[in-house]
Length: 186
Image (cartoon, rainbow, N blue to C red; front, side):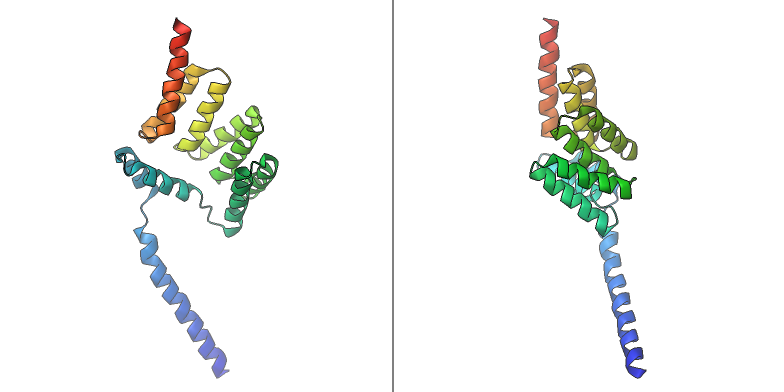
């Protein structure tokens, strides 16, 4: 009995130590709203780092199991296995319907398979859950471009610039779409 009590005390002490040590680390993390403000204020040297911090925060579901499904889906996308990716992301969406990254990943998988309708539906869900999701907005702009809707695409790309003004991919997309629009007026 004495040994159990000692073991119990050690366990409680270890848990308290972990909680006390983790508290300051968690407190050091900036709120997402501050990161978005940092992204607006970022210069050429810092914008990419801040954007990556935001994306990293988006990818945290709060569940190790859901984070594993996300990673498996992302790995399948990296391997260009859109079918497997869609399956992983669909499982993620089923189990965590309020986690925007599941829908975002599945939209990417659908896009790889040229399934634009389902990709658009998932992007809409991402933006309903996270209206400042600049990657989902970029996907929406790309699909609109592909559907030959440059006026709408340029609106979406400009909306990205309101969130992430230094994104080089968005700047290139705007230039590309503007050329298309200027070519139509000739």
